[in-house]
Image (cartoon, rainbow, N blue to C red; front, side, top):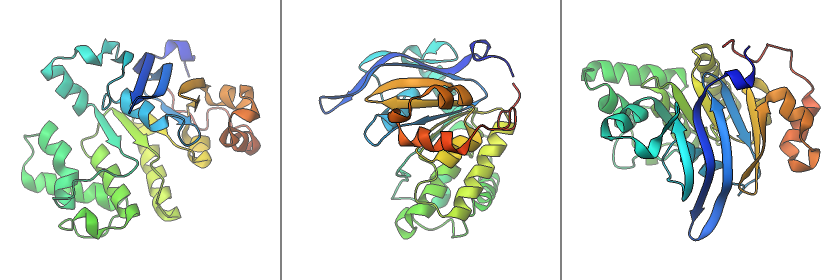
Length: 264
């Protein structure tokens, strides 16, 4: 696999400052997420993980600094290019963030109707049915989000994020509220995305997820990226005091070289 410096970033944050309600959440944060790899960022509750992800996806605007998509500042995108950026990305929200006033079919179908308007309704419905089935959702597509458990809502959110086959997938704690079987199905989806060389950016504290899939591993602390790099280097060089999550990863031992990385 090429060295980190040879991999172009799909998404890059440069000196980003972000705040909410007068409280600074991200402080001069810089990180480059390589194209075609899975990057996992870990950190304690309140460390700024979710804000980092939303800024990276340009769902939240930074107070200072810039976010680059394939080298282009997303703040400078015109309407056409912004639509292309949205078509190229998918976002899994931590709390699912489904539209309450419409059914599951319409929730998941939204990206297809926006970004692939040439698809007929029967094709849209079948595409939605297949991605939901793959993720283990077996309730009716006519149901409303309020009729589902939190885990089922999360599965629907994941389906919505990937149904249009984006090249960049942002995931905020994708295994929260899921049982073991559902987690394994999500892991299978991540496997497939990695084989297809999609860029995957995940914030979570699931050490098993990081151990299996992180080509690049980062730790955010106090609103700043304390460390970010290849998995083994990050685990080996991080001080145990930085996070118990990294300590758990260190306890798992080294991964077989090449076993968890997709060739690029």
